[in-house]
Length: 332
Ligand SMILES: [Zn+2]
Image 1 (cartoon, rainbow, N blue to C red):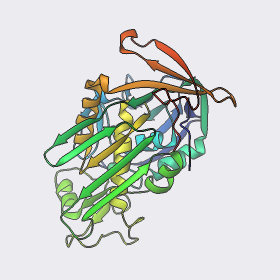
Image 2 (tube, rainbow, N blue to C red):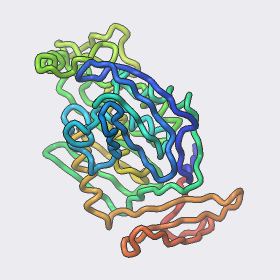
Image 3 (cartoon, protein in one colour):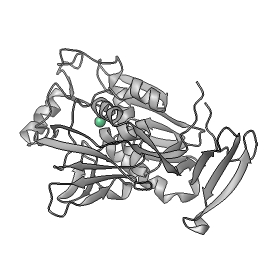
Image 4 (tube, rainbow, N blue to C red):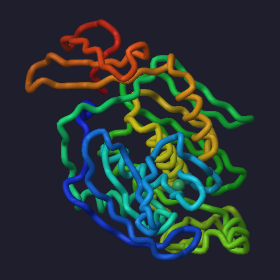
């Protein structure tokens, strides 16, 4: 099914709120997603702190990657950002200010599903500014022992992920998806986070994961063959689907939609962070492009940044079907 990348920036039509427990503290967190002007990006705002600090969702802000991704420093931080960011990126939202009264995004049901429902209630608002898309032009690879993640040039946003666990339940799982809003919502958003029961117990003993219950984590039995959640799995391969969700959520910290194919092998939040830093450190392997469809005309406008001209855009006009690279439109 062909699709075209939305050329314009998007926010939500109206503010929407929810509340739920923080995974680690178990305390109730109130969260509001607000519309935001063009070029805002995604920002978190800590309404419980006196100066209401704003923390941009960006790679530079990542301070911790143990169990979840945390952005910001010290008290001025927000943790467990990945599922909400996956919902925003997966829905095609570029600009939003997320207000919360704690340092944790509520875990909800352990997936991005509740955030997707919230965003559907809010509605999408198309804005009057073009999106800046990060287009990968050369392979970028990051490896740590037998774990690896890479991104290759591709005319859409695709993720192929693989996990391997030494047990009968998960064993080896692989998933590959063209990340469109429709497929994200159908195949990925509802996949929940998971953990081994003894790990959860260990976390509890250390005062962590206090909000973790069978309502928001798939708990894998000691026997490694079954799960403790009575309702079972939402998908046979829910584990790898959740890994894809985490990758989408973490990659949202790059601040722009991606044009590239990510291939991840046994990756986690730490690896995602190192990989994103590697991308930033290799500016000759990617470029920013924008897309514009002029009414019904097939004339499309590609605007590329050049490192030499700083953030100034140099427009290039190309008719559809032109074989001049780069191809500015994604049709799959
Ligand atoms: Zn996760």
